Amino acid sequence: MKQIKNGIYSGSGNRKSVFDLSTPTQWNNKLIVFMHGYMGHKDWGCWNLVEDYFKNYSYGFLKYNVSHNGGTIDKPIDFNDLDAFSQNNYLKEIEDFEAIISLIQAEFKVLPEIYIIGHSRGGGIALLQAENKYVAKITSWAGIASIAERMPTGTTLQKWKNDGYYYRKNGRTHQEMPHAYSQYESFIKNQKRLSIKSYCEKSNTPTLIIHGDKDLSVKIDEGQKVAKWLNTNIIQIKGAQHTFGSSHPWESNILPKHLLEVCKTTLDFFDSKKE
Image 1: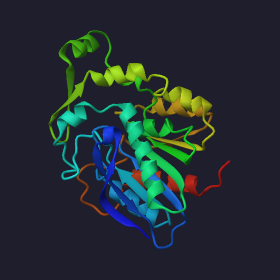
Image 2 (image 1 turned 60 degrees about the vertical axis):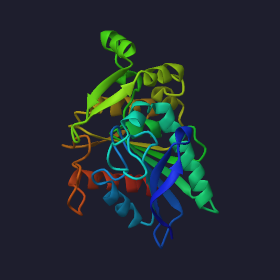
Image 3 (image 1 turned 135 degrees about the vertical axis):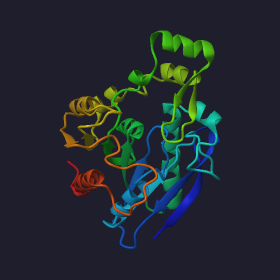
Image 4 (image 1 turned 90 degrees about the vertical axis):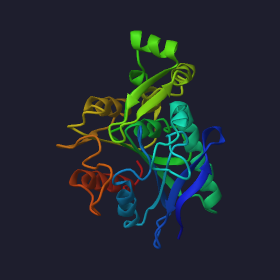
């Protein structure tokens, strides 16, 4: 049995960030790795309750802050390092996941079977692990279908290049979150590795796509595209928005009904035998 809260790992560029790792007493030797979304963190909203849910069904659970999410090891919830946030990019988040795999290898004498859940942007990073030999199953919760479509275009892109930064307001903290132009340069340089469509079309990894039909942040047609590329069905959660009823902070110790439905559906998928 393991119980680590705010452990420290070295992610992309050796930047230190934090992770939680726990295994239940009666462990099935399956470890779920959870990836948070854009402007998110491992302790956002209901993610701790999600961890508890799966532990109750004998799964181990690891969740982590991506290395450049804007938090620090001392303040992992607040975005108090906006310079780090400005330098984040999708390739760094892939490198963070590789660091987490190395961490798992160091923590366990026998490597557990690794399942991953990614939410939103984290869903895109999860889908990009389709060829990862250590990953047995993938689940995307309201995951993105395209990184290219998240990049500014036209005059907005030109202004970003000229100014060096563009800003998006964080609706919860009201901070103006900076994005360095190097994020776009990284995308252009690594387009092949960052093509979710390409990885899905070639994937042999069992993958579950779940999306709320009232999602306004990542529209359900993105989930439908991903399901089509994977030649699988999308699970639509009727009436659910982007975070399946969760918000931050979450004061209750009960999962919202839509997120509970998502967890139950994911558990069934993880419990099923691999095709």
